[in-house]
Length: 362
Image (tube, rainbow, N blue to C red; front, side):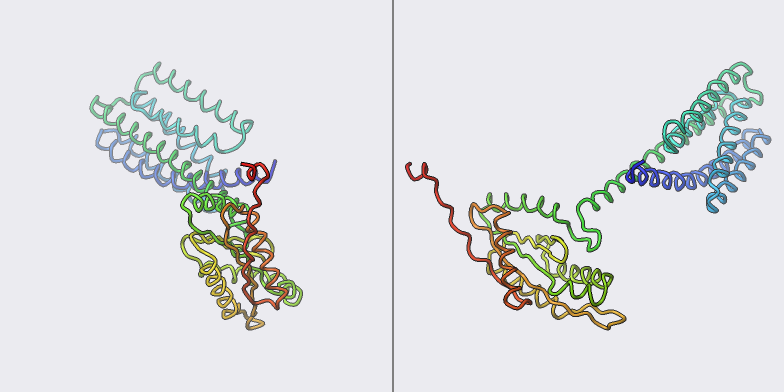
C-alpha cells in the first residue's frame, strides 16, 4: 500500500472514530426521548429498556475515550441491533425501528477495504431481511395505539434522516478539509509555508497575461541569503532552517496584498510584483534588504543570528517571456554577490527583439 493510501486510510479511520463518539452521545439523547415517549404510551417495559440503551452508549463512549475501539463498536452493534429487533417485534415493523439498522451501512463502508466490509455488510443485510420477515409474521407483541404508533414512526424517520444527514455532512466536510490540506501541501514549501516554485510559476503566468492585457508593469525580485552555507556549517542545519523561516516572515511582512513571494530553491526566494515598474521594484527590494539586516533571528544560544540578503531586480519588457525576465533578475543577483553582497542590483534592460527577415521585407 502506498504512503498516500496509508494517509487516506488513517484519516478515514480517525474521522470514523471521532464521528462514532459523537453518534453515541446523540443516540443516548434519543433513547432518553424514547424513555419518556414509552412511559406516555403506556409501555413501561419498552421505556426501561431505553435506560439500558443509554447505559450501553455511555459505556461505549467511555471505551472510545480509552481507545478500546473494538469493544466500543461491539457494544454499539449490540445496542442498535438489539434495539431494532426488540422495537420491531414488540411494536411492529411500521414503528420504523428498522431504519436504525441502515445507519450501519456508511459506518461499515468507511471502516476498511472491500474484503473487510463484505462480511459485516452481508450480515446486516441478512438481519434486516430476517427481522422484516419475522416481524410481519408475528405482528406486534406489545402493540400501542394507532396515534402513538404514527408518532413513533414519524420520530424514527426524523431521527434517521437527521443522523444520515449528519453523517453525510461530516464526511463531506472531512473531504473538503483533506482536499484543502493536500492543496496546501502541493502549493506551499513545507518549511517556510511560502508558495513553492511550481505554484509561483502558475501565478506568474496569470499575472503576465493580465499585465499584457492591461498594459501594466510587472517586476521580479530574486533574493539570496548571504553566506547561508556558512550559517549551516557553523551553527547547524536546524539553525539554518530557523533562519529560513525567520527571513520568510520578514519577506511576507514587506509584501502588499497583490504581491507574491515564494521559495525559489534552497536559500533563494522570488517576489512577483504586479503593477510595479522598475523604480518601485527597486524601492521595494531596498526595503526588503533593510528589513532583513535590521531584524536578526533572536535565539537562546547564540543570542542572535544576523544575516543579510542580496537581491536582483528586473521588470518585464514588452514581449519578453517570464523565463527571460527571471534570467535577467538572476544575473543581477549574481552582480550583487560579486559586488560584496547585502545590496540591490537592477537588471540591464532587455535587449530589443530583432525582427525576422520576412518582417523586414514586408
